[in-house]
Amino acid sequence: MSTETPRIHESKRIIKNQIDGYLKDQSFVILIDINKTSTKLLNEIRFLQKDLNFSMGVYPRRIFLLSLKESDPKAHEILKDKIQMQNLFIIGKGNPIKLAIELSKLEIQLPAKPNDSASDDIIVEAGNTGFPAGPVIGVFTESNIPTRITNGSIHISKTITVARKNDSISVALSNVLTKLGIKPIKGKLNFKAGYDFENNLFLENDVLVPNINEYVNTLKKLVNNAFKLSIEINYPTKENIPSMISQAQFKAKVLANKLEYISPDTIQDLISTSVSKANLLENKIQK
Image 1 (cartoon, one colour):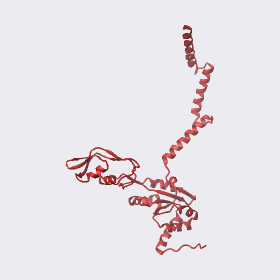
Image 2 (tube, helix red, strand yellow):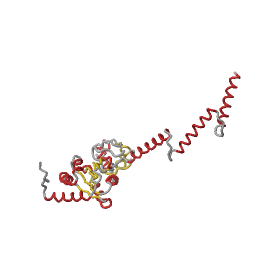
Image 3 (spheres, helix red, strand yellow):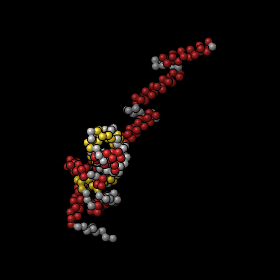
Image 4 (cartoon, helix red, strand yellow):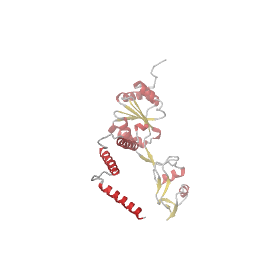
């Protein structure tokens, strides 16, 4: 079987040499789905290259995979099925997760297109739309937005929620929102995967950009469960000693009361119990 490097056109070789250089000097690659990334968001990323110390590019799949295979066959084998369609390649040094989290914070507001999913509830405020009365009012009606004509202008009668989070946006509603200048769609990066060359680690998108709140909540539950377990098995730690002492004091007091053991801590309870028993006995005798 031939193992020769496939021939590529000189113009593409220039691109390959650039990729070769990046892969040689850098320690990770992150794949981003460029089909779902707006030009404005791409420009935002470009501005961060110097500050966050990474390079970016949109390279032909075949050329990038060729460079990757020569540079790191194991990474090539793992990533070749992930590198489909057009990708934005983020190549850098250091911690890929830290960089991905920083980039995931980038967000821009975009106009709604038909069949987009609402990022949040979409609310249209009451008031003057600025549109003169005319056929355009039919678009509002089609989207179930109440209107009235005041002084020749179309007014929205009341504030209304026109779509809930994750609702599919209709053609008519996207038209209305665009006319009103409302941009309800959050444009964010769609991370596909990553690879850490230094540690030979494949990084799924949920590892690259973890749900921090979910991790924190899970950690809190684990800590709380460990705390409860340590008390149940009487395993003393710096954190649970106050609770264990308090629990032991409570159990000791309950036991002392049951045994009618007189002490400064039990005398009041024992007197109250004795009085209650005496009253109960007196009531029975009188009957």
